[in-house]
Each structure stands twice: as structure tokens, then as C-alpha cells.
Image (cartoon, rainbow, N blue to C red; front, side, top):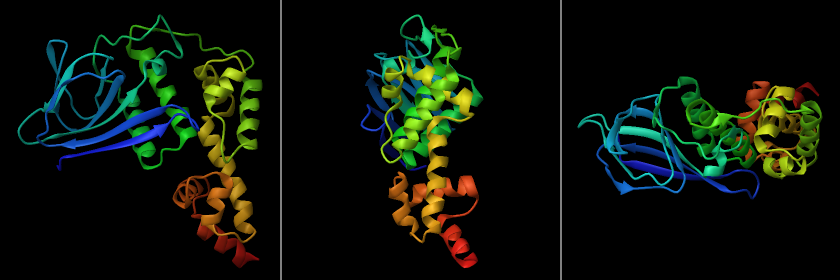
Length: 273
């Protein structure tokens, strides 16, 4: 295991606030005592790390979630002399964990959490956003997962789940995203326009549409891309015209939705013509 730490900065919505993601793989590195202004949320993906925290020690293992509260001094280092440790971490502003809960700032009495479903979801979101930090995807996925984290494991109480007028809300958001597909508005701004919290907007949309806003918009972009490919445009041209970051981003979603690459689809419809 090489000594490596890679930082990626995503944004929560177009021109929204930053969110830092860390991909860390260490054999010997030991952190000096330090603290963060944000919540530190990590998922161990290999080896074992020992973290000095609140006068004791936490020993991580693969699939476990670690949550360190803002301002808490901690260290971190290898759990043994042979295996090293690897983890994926994100650094979340406190406000990101207050949406969808009651009782003020969430406090995590237990910093080491055993929640395989949430650990898998956090790890997958971290990996995919590190490769392609799409702003709408980041804003759709990360606040939703952080709300789940706070609701399940902190001292905060879950807020109400019912969102009156959810169908109307979802359709309004859908139409705005479709109208502005190359530079979609932030979910925070859409929620403010509707007098909602971002969590309420996300819940209304997911309940009504069956998927989060970024996934709905990606599928809508794919449908628009199909028409442009059929008209003879190249995938590299089409990607920007429908709002994907680049051709690789288009290809990833095109294959997810249709099972083929944009180039293969273009060739097949041209051959059929």
C-alpha cells in the first residue's frame, strides 16, 4: 500500500459551496493532533486505523463509518505494523447535517458506527464524485446521505417526513431542471423559491419521481443526446450540448440507461438509415 492522499473538491450545486473529499491510502503515516471545523465522516475500505479521540482510541475496520464532531482534537495512524489503512473521507459543514432533523446541531456520542448500508452508499458516492464531481449529483446525494447519518446515529431527532404537495413540488423541480439542463439551478435555491428545506425538496422529488434529481436529469440528458446522435453529431459535441461534463460523463450515463456507448448507438442508427 503506497503512501497516498488525493483531494477532490466538489461543489454542492452549480456555483454552490465546496465539499472536500479525501481518498487516503497509508502504510505508515501518522497524523499529528489536529481538529476540523467541519464534521469528518470517513469509511474504512482497507486495513485498520487507530484514532485517538476523546481520551480513548478508536480502531476502524473495513466497512465501518467514523464520524468526528467539529472541533474535536484527534490523531490517526496504522492499526498494526503490516496492513496499513485506507479510507474515504468527506468534510461536511455543520449545516449539512441539520437539514431534516430537530434539536440543533447533531452530536455523535459513538464515533464508530456499524451501518453497512449507509457505509456502502457513502463509499460509492465518494468514489463516483471523486471521478466526476458533478455539482447537481453532489447536491442530490451528499446532503441526503448526511441527513440519514444524523437521523440514524446522532442525538438529533428526525424531522417530519411528510411533504405536503409533493407531486406539485416534484413536477416544478423537474420542469426547472429540464429547462436549464446545461447549467441547472442549485437544489438549495429551488427549495428556497418553494419555501422548503433542501431535504424536503429531495424527499418530495424522490418519493414522486422514484429517483433523485441528478439521476432524473441524467436520463433526460441521455434522451436529448439520442436525438442529436441520430442527427449525426459526434459524442464529444453532444456531451456539452446536453450538459454533461465531458464525453466520458455522457458515456457513463448513456451505458447505464441504454446499455451501449454513444458512439455505438450513433453507428447503429446511421447503419439502420
